[in-house]
Length: 571
Image (cartoon, one colour):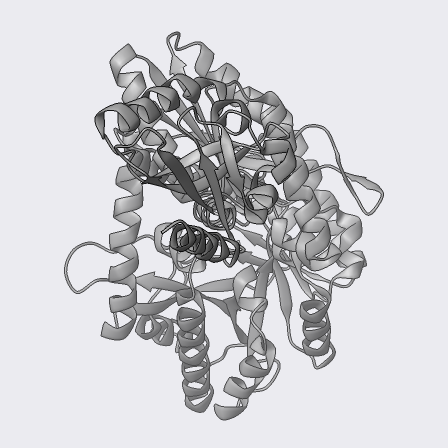
């Protein structure tokens, strides 16, 4: 019998040793170690010799668990209450905690010599993988800030606490201005470095309760909870602005950057994390429309405008397909002879039902989407078709000018498409001209300027529209491939009574002529303004004093001599 018992014990020990990744320890009635396999050494750091005879609670049980372990062991030995298998964090020799799944087996139960064996499976790899997965689903890998999902979870918890305390919360949505250009010019490595530096700056300024996230490539959101005094709101927003004030170091150069901020406030601008983020994003988008470094606070008007623009955008796409878009034409009159020389094509939207929609409303909307390209193609096609028809009819007219936005001229192949359309309608360089604002020219890349220079050399007329309202100086004119200046109506309106505006107009006309450019005065609405622009020797006049924009049929009657101009230039 004794022999069978020894053989059984040897087989049991051999089985335990054959499990290299399973840590097994044996303890006597007093919880002293009687068995310690190699896997236990790897898991807990003690050799079998070091562990032999020592108490379980002194070896691997953290201090806060020791009393409970002793009581559980006693209850099993004395009352037969088994210790359930469970996930635990036990203590390594170094003091670090080790996650394990621990299962307990009692041998010689109900005898004077019970033995407890603990079978521990190391969960470190699984826990590490779980943490990495949790990090990947809740945090941004580059900046180590919360991602949008993790941010929304914490923000909802923070909002619940604000409700209990009857406090406010401010959410700031930050969008770096022209970040795409930084990536294009310096590379994604420098762009990533900038994002990490910005995240570090924001982190240094945060309070313990503040929450931050990188929600997209160059966008961050920061929540400031627990606000009692409304005067603290602008102070916290300025705190975010100040983070951007210090230059960033990129490629060993100090670069000054700006960011647009949208601000939403709980509870007035939203009750949930999703609502606040969405409304702060709306305010941020409005800030970007206002220019670099702008701050906009969300209000109901912004929401209503956004809803209106969304519906208007849907209607605009339908209007293009339904033929509700039409071209009107406004004549440009010779200041000396009174003859109609050119026309400017102006887009109008006349819905089948309801009033006309202002170009000031729908054109900026189209420019924020790909719809501007479809509309631009239609305008070009319609203007060329109309010009060809009037040429065939023999009506006296030099040219039709059409407007191009910055987004349109940045479109690849835009000038090739322009020339192909003209060729298809049998038109030459003197039949259709281009109008661009000075800001579009200033922001144009090398490819765009090269395309414009090619058109210029071929004899196309290229005018700077609304001249004087942008950020250029007159000295820039020599760098642009242009043939004409159109002085903005604001100068024409104020010049009779404002010496400063008059001086700017006179300088523009003088320098324009010295550079061989044609000068057009826009917005002439009365006799006094007309006399002034004639005195300054402007070449062409455009404005309501002579002609409002007209439908093509009215233009035909005008050019055919059926309708005289509304003013007599010869007097």
